[in-house]
Image 1 (cartoon, rainbow, N blue to C red):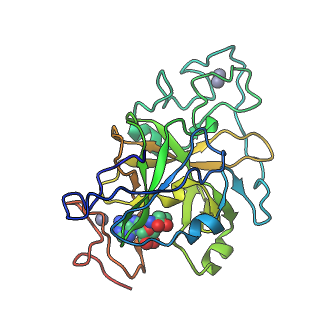
Image 2: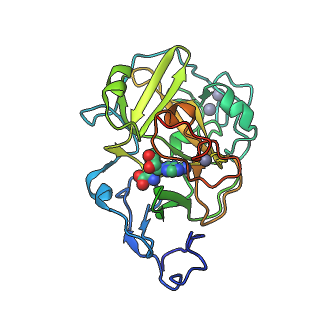
Length: 280
Ligand SMILES: C[S@@+](CC[C@H](N)C(=O)[O-])C[C@H]1O[C@@H](n2cnc3c(N)ncnc32)[C@H](O)[C@@H]1O
Ligand SMILES: [Zn+2]
Ligand SMILES: [Zn+2]
Ligand SMILES: [Zn+2]
């Protein structure tokens, strides 16, 4: 039985129709949970993307191989079992149970997790995002303007890691050359920038829509060692997200520059709706 969320058409004369499950698992088993896709019976949505786009849970290069960048100094700890908050690897953001306790601290600097050369256990509490998302989500036809969106299939507590933005790692030059900036996600680490394009390959996070009052925050996290030292753009809930609620992030000012459409997030604090937005 498909899961019914708070559909936008609730209360309309067509609400007797059930959304259909169009795909059982677009991750093809890459995630810990199936990622289904649900239609909305009141409008048509093109499903071509699910047949053409390549699902990947890694950051890859243009050949599809795991992307690599030059190494930057990494901490390695010699803790046994569980690392303490004072361990040199720990940024101190994760509390017991692997959830984030202080959102401001998460956003402040790169979060360091333990890496493969650390001697602590795999169950060390400083290994969170590297293990992948644990809470199931699903893709749904949100509305004709925003298109597809992502919603929670279960209640997801505050401070929970819910996914990493994956796709193709591209350099600055390539990013300016790409004609479609829709799925470009950029972050800065010091003077370096890192851009991922999830247009052709990525995971369910590329379907997360923008809201001016988002319930998910994005942070830079590192857990690779040596050759494949990369910063990962990781998503954490900033509120308790109830089953059926949409997950949203703030795409940021730069993303909205030059976009020819207005924001449809519906928030009272919307910054990019038609009357606020300077088009072009
Ligand atoms: C990264 S994609 C998100 C997934 C997208 N909804 C889809 O169907 O593939 C970004 C695109 O989603 C739509 N979108 C996301 N958030 C929106 C918002 N708040 N208002 C209007 N459109 C939005 C826009 O078309 C935007 O270019
Ligand atoms: Zn340690
Ligand atoms: Zn550790
Ligand atoms: Zn908005």
